[in-house]
Image 1 (cartoon, one colour):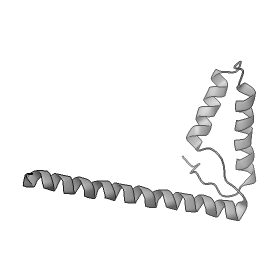
Image 2 (cartoon, one colour):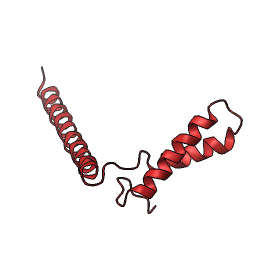
Image 3 (cartoon, rainbow, N blue to C red):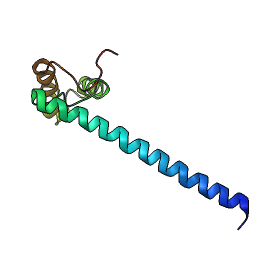
Image 4 (cartoon, one colour):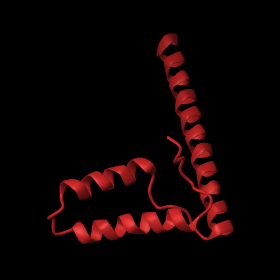
Length: 94
């Protein structure tokens, strides 16, 4: 095996472990934030702002769909959570 192939393999392994380690740390921090909110206030909002907007658009577009009641109840669950909790997991200032 050539020296350049060995160098490429070593760099690839280092990059893989680096990205995997960073992803693990980032995910664990997010889970800690969620757990803190659950412990302090009993929960947090179920959807991100983008997901809530997508749900609103779907409801507007598919007003006669057979699943519309389920989607409206999910949206109402989001609104109840927004009223109930003082602190949010997602950034709603955007």
